[in-house]
Image (cartoon, rainbow, N blue to C red; front, side, top):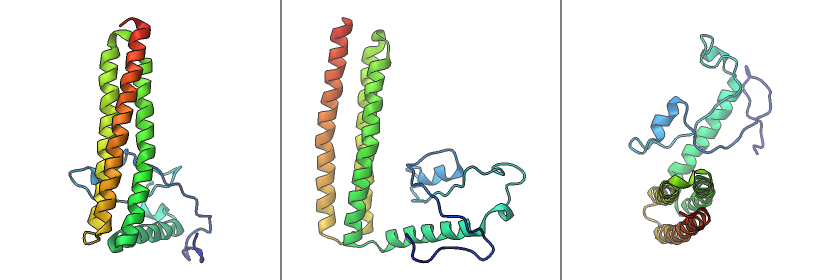
Amino acid sequence: QFIKPILSVQGSRDSFRYKVLPFMGGSDHKIYNDRLVNVPMVFFNVWPDPYYESDLDTPDRCDPTTMRREAVVAVASAVFVASAAGPEALTLASEVYSRGLGRISRDIKKAFEYLNTWEKAKLALAYQEAENVVRRSFIREKTTVESVLMLAPKDAALPRYISALKARLDFQLNGVVQDIWNHYRALCDRNGV
């Protein structure tokens, strides 16, 4: 929470309502987060917007207060990342890891849903898809955690910590793959496959 309200003289006095959401596509920002381009970004959206993608969607319709608030958040994010040394990098690594576990959890749920909803004739295919979803999820999160190393390349503690987090993810992956296999075998037994 900011001590002093972030307002613009010409802008609204509306409260600052926001949500931190996981990455989603559907806008021009998606190209910057592509792994080949790999530009970190903060995406701002005002929704609902009655002018969105209409001929009235022009800069003069933007609220100056909202624009100022978005600029403050974007600059603060950039300053944090650009100046992150050892302590900040460790904090960011723990944040990335814990949020990654949430994303992995959603992917595990999706994998079990594949197994539970596919017809029995395609159960082997469902198992392959479920295992692939889980493995790709862990690979994605290991890569994401490892990306924090760029912030503090001279910090001796950070590489050890990142290695420990990645090893923990490998350990968890093995357990989840076994869980998926056990569930698949139980479904096969029940369905006589």
